[in-house]
Length: 436
Image (cartoon, rainbow, N blue to C red; front, side, top):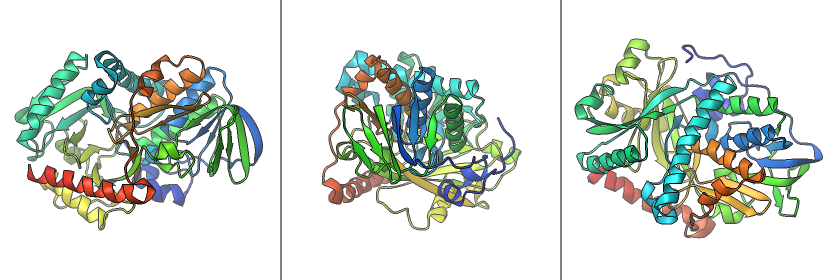
């Protein structure tokens, strides 16, 4: 794991302002040329994040000519902004999958999430991606009433073969120097990384495998023909297969997909470097941590000994007022010993959630595939989704078909009312976190 920040190679204010400290601490390659003119490919992929890059990389190894169209820069969306926590499982509880799929297939889907983490680690090693991978993650209880459900989750994961450990309050405090938590579930398979560095590493690996990536090439129209066509302002790609991996940024490309996800703002801040001793005293084993509130806090240490602290979810199109100040206050609640420290950078972006928080993966037509609805668990799961889509395009669709059976209902209210309705619902859950 790197011990010093990586200087920026290319000054890109648009990307830097979007992803904050992440862009300041990893080399940024020069932008790829926008698409110009009409071309053809075996596969055209909308979106240069984890899902699209994973699918493109896997397809290239199988001999497919792939083109990726990214509206901004590679990693500009959730893939380059997120909290960096790569987790076993999905955004929903296992019980949701069991209700949708039955016990046997739900357990198969869960096992695939473990494979997604193995895939992530394998790609980091195979392609020499310098993204500060660190193993270990703890889910922690803010209130005593949360302990039984978390202990039940630990037992369930152990039955499924994940070597999690249950930590009582004493064991947890030996690793996390916070008075806030009452116990936790430690998962040694999950972990954390530098999300933008990982996205850029995937893009480099895809290019080396023969994938063509066009940045600043927003798709304005998807023509659903026997050979789909994706059009941009300056060109088009006709392909045998198309992949939609835009997540929260579809903007009318596929209305039936957009209706089944909700963009939710999430935010991350970085302290100044704390020094090795002070940083390691906060989280002694270097793991990532997240509480189990509905509106959760999550945090981890960077390679240069900053505390990266996330949360403050926003269920509207606007970021919270006084973002850095409010996140600093939350950080002080978790770590009172940092009262003399403020977050000196904060950034955010949209993730996409589904109504049941289960992943929404499948196909629109026999030739158009999609993956969305990662619901806050996309770092590992998005790479898995790209792999399963690539398998299906290559003629082996059996594994993604498990996810196609999950039913996803549209959010109520349509374009105009769905956000206000969600804001009202989430306000109730936040109040429940505070009162019970």
